[in-house]
Image (cartoon, rainbow, N blue to C red; front, side, top):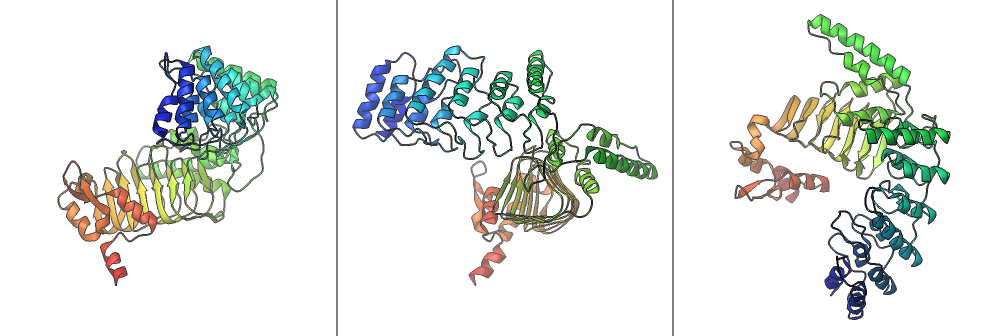
Length: 494
């Protein structure tokens, strides 16, 4: 019955709106749960209010939405991503038909009429509000702001709505925020102001240049600063002395040139000068550049350069619980994580890194540079990872993506190079290099893994029709603190 309701409320072309609304009321009267969720966690109200996305999508039916609301639909229900119906109703992009924005405003007005608040977070995972909907059509965005969407809200990246709309190059939305008194001197998690972001907007096309020019003019007319001084706060951006950074880079370049001359090899240290040419707003802002691509040979220089400027050994910082890093991260000193650490953004530590669970990076943006050593239960990398010191872990697994894992010495019981090169000395009970492993199909690989690892990390490979070690199962057990080595499991049993 509830599935029929979810289907009945979905906007359709050419349907009779009143007939559809009557069907909705009838289904609910017959027992359909108006609060039921689909596989995305969406309720009937989410589906009914969904704004068009492509030219083939129909407009939401006001009659159907009204029927749901009158039958008790929850205007603050959230889907699996923590998103409310109001966010589903926001029409995006001014280039789309005006009818989309008009209907979006009408739908939002209905939701507000039935108690929807537009001043809270709309995504539980990012801390964003409706004012952060930086791709919204201008009339829709104006409605949101006029009905409580907070102009001063900060998301998990430290961005205010003004930061977000500037980053999306939306001069119309920037103008609306400035007219409503948005703070034009606020700094985000990288220490950047809205004008600081605007001055870095791409300007490759005529459209980009026009948007950049309009936004910069709007902000400058409002007295917005390009850079500001801000206090140091744990977890916030760390102020950077760019002049000192350039001086330290110059010293490092001289040192590298001398080494190259002594070795009789070409000096390629010029990249250090290029690296520090921009004006940075924080150390996080500086390391953010790693996400744009960095030669593996250059990666160790980032924490070294930062450490020289900051001096000393820094401080020890402890993070309690599992951590997920999706914004540029920098810490001067040692870092301890009492849980698992998942990294999907540039990550630099000038000291050592201790992770009580699993250290995992993922994807091309997850560039990790550690000046000291790394200790963890497991290390999984499919990005670029550089560790100046040693790595000590039970399992170290480098996976695909044509990246490298660099370290002094890797000490582990199991080390696997799965299409992912390792540049380090390896001391391991079992070590498969690129030539040995062959994506798990190398001679005797599975037999040796079977001798070392518990049965629970093996599963039948659909293509091969035989059991093979599954890295997902392996690291899931490492995260859960369960034994992965056969000898450990047998010892626990006795």
